[in-house]
Length: 332
Length: 270
Image (cartoon, rainbow over all chains, first blue to last red; front, side, top):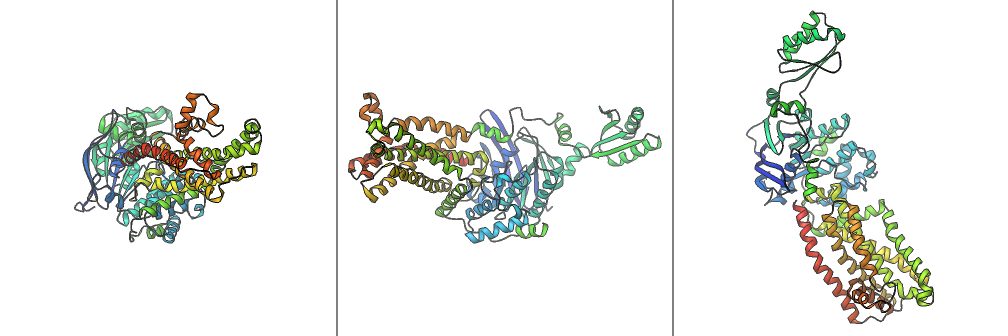
């Protein structure tokens, strides 16, 4: 990505408390236009609160942020005209049909009745929802709701789109659909800021990633940079014969140069590795020593592993209860 | 899906931001669509008034006024006011539902006149009030109610009830903006509505009540509106009656509108 493209989001020292809970404490952020920026963190880390401040739905207690060159507090209307937000919970009207939801938003964005209808049909077609267009949204599946929600956010294609956990709770097929939509959005020039709990998702979509924990950014960089600091991931091996497990453990530990854990499964071994090349060599060693391998997998580091590497403790729910949204409701 | 998706996302001219009236009417259209999809909500708002009307006129009519039709003549205007008053609480419940479901967030992230969500709901509310009042009115006529004030009297009485209903909604909007669930909004609204509607002269004349209760009944804004509606329908309304009724509405509005708007603007910001 062109590091000299203008900044779509520039924030410094963003802070927000709800009662005694410090949800966000001093977040700095710069996001280049035309890129996908990922916000990675567990529930309650402050992702949603940050995104809501940037989308002008919450006023920061301290700090400043400008979105597409407009201050989010003083110039909120100008920001609203050019961004859209898809929240964590699909914000569609369940009692209306899919088409009515989109026509409603089209009208509110300024389209004439006929234009709003045409635009709604175009989006329904593009999002594979034509068949369900006339049904009330309360009968939609989670994936359909989420797609309709995103469609609602791009009735007028935004210059910047906030996606708050766009795939949480979706099945793999719907998740791929959503990813495809995000990629298509970026191809035509929209900047995307998305939050996620899945490293995999940030890896697939985001050009840069900020890891957020307890209201602060604890690491920032490309997914490659983050992984370099974390390790490539975990090697899982299942030997064919439980008797050979100890031998396998010794061999692996020698070739990989790391500690190898015995899982509760009597044939399984796990090691965290940084260099995939060594894994190939280690597996060859196993074969040479006649240790039968039934199955092996090199997994991406999970969010837990990233957190463990960055903070020395596992990812956990925030010390207060529930998700960001709950905190807000408590304070509201 | 990829090609149609890319085409649907292609940059295009941005329409001009809609005016205040246009966005309010769009929200009104939304509320009417909801009535179309969930007609039960009209059943809810008409079944109770019908039940009340039938129950009270047949149960007490003979005892209180000598006959069912004579009692209907006395009670129907009050039942109309009560019907409309009870329906007003659905405004707060609907607002609370929107907030809870996240739809409200979507609306407030749009560059529209910020009050149009409320204004649009009021358009649809007016339609709902009129519908429910018509049902009770027709039932009343069938039971023997005869409005001597004629068409003009009835239309003016309806207009007064609508003004009153709109002023009451400012109270429920406060609940809708501050309480966490639609259920708690409903409970709180009922806690206020029941005493407000029953400490009036809707069912019996206040002259039958103890002095302290008469005093309460006389200052109740609902009583003032009932007197005016009754007299308008009977064709015997005095400027004083109507003045008191309108003043009662104005007091309710003056007290609650600033609170509602303050809370609403705060909700939009946080």
